[in-house]
Image (cartoon, rainbow, N blue to C red):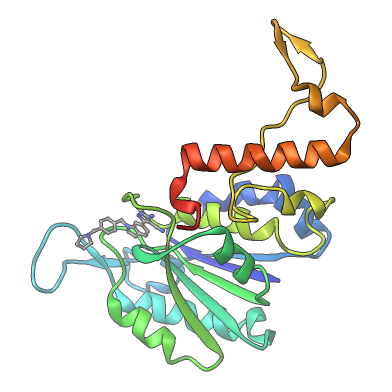
Length: 234
Ligand SMILES: N#Cc1c(-c2ccc3ccn(Cc4ccc(CN5CCCC5)cc4)c3c2)n[nH]c1N
């Protein structure tokens, strides 16, 4: 998988050089390209924003730098991929879920366009949809407003990257997580068996794998019913 990110804060993504994704990149499982949108703004001040048509507070991101950035990124190393998905993080987007992460983890090339200010000129999204071999998705991290797309893209890349085959050492651990089976995860415990008068549930020490699996599923259902009843079927 190749991931390209376009942002006016490219330094924001330096952290992707370490941790899980850093190792995935070292092993060639994920290629990452980060691009400064201002490199595609050619005036003296490298301007990327302007006042909104129709008035209103704040500034809107100009279309020209975005157009040139996508010309390069979609015509660059990522162009080798048979297709690209361009993701625009947006408070007005479809909700990002584990299912979204699973879908995007199967794509050969992802491009994230990180907006700032009050957003990106809508013609950028519309024009990107016309590019050959490109699918566009506007995706929201959640129902709150951030100051830009970078934090959302970091979260999305972490959720997607860990699902890319080979990135996580034990793939079985991916199937027992919250939201993988539509339920929240069961509680976890490790040594010591007794800690500050608190005991590990005895079933987990029983060695009875059937009983342990049943207890864990019951815990998932109980926790989901208590914390996220919206996830349970009607
Ligand atoms: N993913 C995700 C996001 C984002 C997100 C993603 C990308 C950008 C780019 C800029 N902003 C800031 C912004 C955007 C819209 C408004 C509303 N305005 C009203 C009239 C015109 C816009 C105000 C601030 C962004 C926020 N927020 N929350 C999420 N889950």
